[in-house]
Image 1 (tube, rainbow, N blue to C red):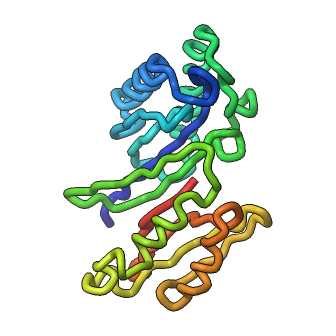
Image 2: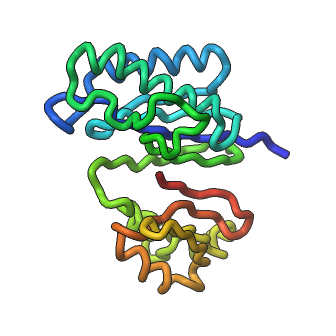
Length: 220
């Protein structure tokens, strides 16, 4: 069985310029240095550091699976280091605000940072798209994800590509009650649309290709 590659995107606001506005270049530099060390040590395969507004974003590939404590620990320690060595000395606004606890417990979920992870069998050419936003509704990506994976008016492959023709399964979370439901499209398309129209409560958490349950998209 081919080895799966894990894509992990972990983000946090650890301080910014001029209110909740944008990260400082030295924060990006410090994060890149930490992830470059992890790459050289073999913990991760590759990485990309960027920002969305005042969120520092760590995009990493590795073979350790979702929710791995080593990967989450790397992200947590990177955020802590950036906070202590850059944000606080430069007196940046809200330094370390998304680090809600003092001690890392093995997984950053529930500790402040946002997380989106997926495992895939990598193809020879494997482009990925990352949507990043700050200060939005939880379901900010409901509509574009619906258009990509459920609308034949937008995605011709749903009609003509045999690997996509069966459709996709949308896992939708109710963030108010903490419940999830899997909706199979196109059969349950109307039910999906009914939920996705309330992005403050219903959020696309994960999308699977129906033919083989391969993960097609995830959201934080």
